[in-house]
Length: 273
Image (cartoon, rainbow, N blue to C red; front, side, top):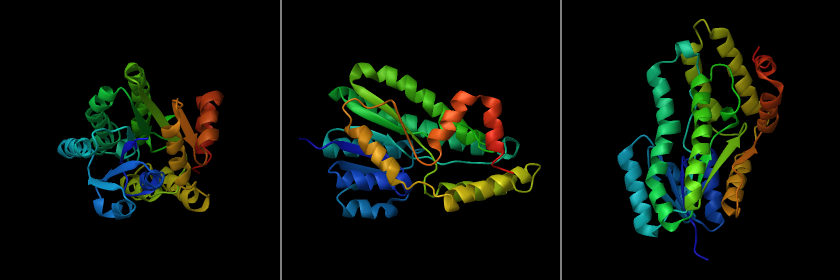
């Protein structure tokens, strides 16, 4: 059977790297893309391919897709994993920072998908896997811009799924919970710079404390729970539209869906005192 060709962004660390390594070991032809190409040497040593790509750089994305098509003739699976979170009070966060959040988490992802889709349509097959978050269904204080991008990704993916069904292309959403990655460290320091000394200082300190405890002391789930889920979504003949895994994801999403806004507000704020 011909090997599936997979392109995954954000493959230099965390869930992206874990997934790329697992898929290589499972026998797929994997192209890992990230800005920090030097951190993907382990992918290459296992037989994968590393591509330097910033998802806000159109030329790099075009070049990457062209390279894969030239070398492999197809792209079977696109895993849109690159992303990050900015935290800070809405009042304290510059619109420039907010725009950057959307450029990476939504517009860069959307542009790369646009570049890959013609090749999937030509083969009347393909799978687009978008890494969202439980944050696409819930919300937390000081995370307005991050949650906005993930809520947007959820709706964007649902619309894309309807558009692509006629071409035999599946769209899958992955919703991780708390996963042991760089996420917590990358989130908290800039948050404290934005809101640590403003009118929102008390809540910022509480969010920092809760986040640190969740990621360091609370037993965040290993990245492998997500890489296993992605592998499952790739192998499935008819994949689910959504897969959920990782610490707190299912219980928090359940509470948000069935208990109402006021109860969820109380539940979240009770954890950041």
